[in-house]
Length: 177
Image 1 (cartoon, helix red, strand yellow):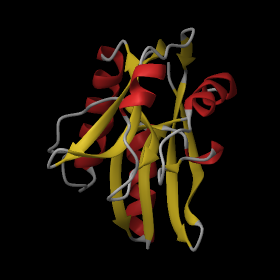
Image 2 (cartoon, rainbow, N blue to C red):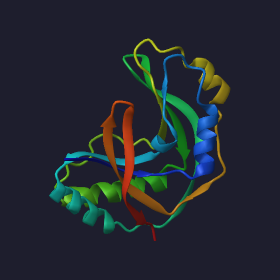
Image 3 (cartoon, rainbow, N blue to C red):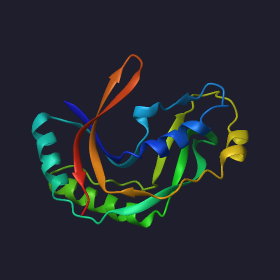
Image 4 (cartoon, one colour):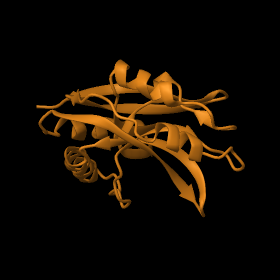
Protein backbone atom coordinates (compact mmCIF):
# COMPACT_ATOMS: atom_id res chain seq x y z
CA UNK A 1 0.00 0.00 0.00
CA UNK A 2 1.05 3.57 -0.71
CA UNK A 3 0.06 6.57 1.45
CA UNK A 4 -0.09 9.48 -0.99
CA UNK A 5 -0.69 13.21 -1.07
CA UNK A 6 -0.28 16.00 -3.63
CA UNK A 7 1.70 19.09 -2.64
CA UNK A 8 3.86 22.02 -3.64
CA UNK A 9 7.42 22.16 -2.30
CA UNK A 10 8.41 25.74 -1.44
CA UNK A 11 11.85 26.85 -2.65
CA UNK A 12 14.84 26.65 -0.29
CA UNK A 13 14.71 30.37 0.54
CA UNK A 14 11.08 30.09 1.65
CA UNK A 15 11.77 26.93 3.66
CA UNK A 16 14.64 28.79 5.36
CA UNK A 17 12.29 31.68 6.19
CA UNK A 18 9.85 29.20 7.73
CA UNK A 19 12.62 27.55 9.75
CA UNK A 20 13.63 31.00 11.08
CA UNK A 21 10.27 31.47 12.83
CA UNK A 22 10.14 27.99 14.37
CA UNK A 23 10.76 27.87 18.08
CA UNK A 24 9.56 29.22 21.36
CA UNK A 25 6.62 26.86 21.92
CA UNK A 26 7.32 24.20 24.53
CA UNK A 27 6.46 20.69 23.37
CA UNK A 28 5.85 21.65 19.72
CA UNK A 29 6.92 19.08 17.13
CA UNK A 30 8.45 21.35 14.50
CA UNK A 31 8.50 20.20 10.88
CA UNK A 32 11.94 19.52 9.51
CA UNK A 33 13.25 20.77 6.16
CA UNK A 34 11.98 17.75 4.22
CA UNK A 35 8.49 17.96 5.70
CA UNK A 36 7.70 21.54 4.65
CA UNK A 37 5.13 21.54 1.88
CA UNK A 38 1.82 23.10 0.86
CA UNK A 39 -0.73 20.31 0.51
CA UNK A 40 -3.03 20.46 -2.50
CA UNK A 41 -4.83 17.18 -1.81
CA UNK A 42 -4.46 14.31 0.65
CA UNK A 43 -5.20 10.96 -1.01
CA UNK A 44 -4.45 8.36 1.66
CA UNK A 45 -3.73 4.65 1.34
CA UNK A 46 -3.94 3.17 -2.16
CA UNK A 47 -2.70 -0.03 -3.76
CA UNK A 48 -0.07 -0.16 -6.50
CA UNK A 49 -2.65 -0.14 -9.33
CA UNK A 50 -4.50 2.87 -7.94
CA UNK A 51 -1.16 4.65 -7.42
CA UNK A 52 -0.54 4.27 -11.18
CA UNK A 53 -4.02 5.61 -11.94
CA UNK A 54 -3.38 8.57 -9.60
CA UNK A 55 -0.14 9.33 -11.45
CA UNK A 56 -1.90 9.19 -14.83
CA UNK A 57 -4.71 11.43 -13.56
CA UNK A 58 -2.29 14.02 -12.19
CA UNK A 59 -0.35 13.98 -15.46
CA UNK A 60 -3.51 15.20 -17.17
CA UNK A 61 -3.87 18.33 -15.00
CA UNK A 62 -3.24 21.56 -16.92
CA UNK A 63 -2.90 24.85 -15.07
CA UNK A 64 -0.78 27.94 -15.63
CA UNK A 65 2.18 28.64 -13.36
CA UNK A 66 1.55 31.41 -10.83
CA UNK A 67 3.28 33.31 -8.00
CA UNK A 68 2.43 32.99 -4.30
CA UNK A 69 4.05 34.20 -1.07
CA UNK A 70 4.00 33.45 2.64
CA UNK A 71 1.39 35.55 4.42
CA UNK A 72 1.11 35.35 8.22
CA UNK A 73 1.02 32.64 10.86
CA UNK A 74 -1.96 30.98 12.44
CA UNK A 75 -3.13 27.96 14.40
CA UNK A 76 -5.79 25.35 13.85
CA UNK A 77 -7.48 24.30 17.05
CA UNK A 78 -9.61 21.48 18.32
CA UNK A 79 -12.12 22.36 21.03
CA UNK A 80 -10.34 25.66 21.64
CA UNK A 81 -6.86 24.15 22.03
CA UNK A 82 -4.25 24.77 19.28
CA UNK A 83 -3.13 21.56 17.54
CA UNK A 84 -1.29 22.83 14.45
CA UNK A 85 0.77 25.94 13.68
CA UNK A 86 0.78 27.03 10.04
CA UNK A 87 2.07 29.70 7.67
CA UNK A 88 -0.54 31.27 5.43
CA UNK A 89 -0.27 31.78 1.67
CA UNK A 90 -1.40 34.62 -0.61
CA UNK A 91 -2.98 34.89 -3.04
CA UNK A 92 -5.15 31.85 -2.42
CA UNK A 93 -7.30 31.84 -5.57
CA UNK A 94 -4.74 30.22 -7.94
CA UNK A 95 -4.17 27.51 -5.33
CA UNK A 96 -7.89 26.92 -4.94
CA UNK A 97 -8.24 26.59 -8.72
CA UNK A 98 -5.34 24.11 -8.90
CA UNK A 99 -6.74 22.17 -5.92
CA UNK A 100 -10.07 21.88 -7.72
CA UNK A 101 -8.43 20.55 -10.90
CA UNK A 102 -6.36 18.04 -8.92
CA UNK A 103 -9.44 16.91 -6.98
CA UNK A 104 -11.49 16.50 -10.18
CA UNK A 105 -8.72 14.47 -11.84
CA UNK A 106 -8.47 12.18 -8.81
CA UNK A 107 -12.24 11.68 -8.59
CA UNK A 108 -12.21 10.50 -12.24
CA UNK A 109 -9.97 7.57 -11.24
CA UNK A 110 -12.00 6.61 -8.18
CA UNK A 111 -10.53 8.66 -5.33
CA UNK A 112 -13.23 10.06 -3.05
CA UNK A 113 -13.75 13.81 -3.52
CA UNK A 114 -12.27 16.18 -0.96
CA UNK A 115 -15.19 17.24 1.22
CA UNK A 116 -13.31 19.67 3.45
CA UNK A 117 -12.94 23.36 2.67
CA UNK A 118 -9.50 23.96 1.17
CA UNK A 119 -7.30 26.28 3.26
CA UNK A 120 -3.87 26.77 1.63
CA UNK A 121 -1.11 26.69 4.27
CA UNK A 122 2.23 25.19 5.19
CA UNK A 123 2.19 23.27 8.47
CA UNK A 124 5.18 24.27 10.59
CA UNK A 125 4.41 22.43 13.87
CA UNK A 126 2.14 19.88 15.48
CA UNK A 127 1.10 20.62 19.04
CA UNK A 128 0.46 17.74 21.43
CA UNK A 129 -2.00 18.20 24.25
CA UNK A 130 -0.48 20.48 26.87
CA UNK A 131 2.05 22.15 24.55
CA UNK A 132 3.17 25.62 25.54
CA UNK A 133 1.16 28.71 24.64
CA UNK A 134 1.41 29.88 21.02
CA UNK A 135 0.31 33.50 21.46
CA UNK A 136 3.82 34.95 21.86
CA UNK A 137 4.98 33.22 18.65
CA UNK A 138 1.93 34.48 16.76
CA UNK A 139 2.50 38.02 18.05
CA UNK A 140 6.26 37.92 17.34
CA UNK A 141 6.08 36.29 13.90
CA UNK A 142 2.44 36.64 12.86
CA UNK A 143 3.41 39.16 10.20
CA UNK A 144 5.50 36.53 8.40
CA UNK A 145 5.89 37.27 4.70
CA UNK A 146 8.19 36.26 1.87
CA UNK A 147 8.94 37.58 -1.58
CA UNK A 148 6.66 35.98 -4.17
CA UNK A 149 7.87 32.68 -5.57
CA UNK A 150 6.80 30.87 -8.72
CA UNK A 151 4.69 27.74 -8.51
CA UNK A 152 5.62 25.96 -11.73
CA UNK A 153 5.13 22.37 -10.59
CA UNK A 154 3.39 20.20 -8.04
CA UNK A 155 4.39 16.79 -6.72
CA UNK A 156 2.92 13.45 -5.77
CA UNK A 157 4.40 12.47 -2.40
CA UNK A 158 4.52 9.16 -0.63
CA UNK A 159 4.45 9.27 3.16
CA UNK A 160 6.08 6.56 5.24
CA UNK A 161 5.87 6.33 9.00
CA UNK A 162 9.18 5.80 10.81
CA UNK A 163 10.07 5.73 14.53
CA UNK A 164 11.41 9.27 14.05
CA UNK A 165 8.21 10.56 12.45
CA UNK A 166 6.83 10.67 8.92
CA UNK A 167 9.18 10.60 5.95
CA UNK A 168 7.95 12.31 2.77
CA UNK A 169 9.38 11.28 -0.60
CA UNK A 170 8.57 12.82 -3.97
CA UNK A 171 7.21 10.04 -6.19
CA UNK A 172 6.47 12.20 -9.27
CA UNK A 173 6.65 15.84 -10.38
CA UNK A 174 4.14 17.54 -12.67
CA UNK A 175 4.98 20.75 -14.53
CA UNK A 176 2.45 23.54 -14.77
CA UNK A 177 1.85 25.15 -18.17
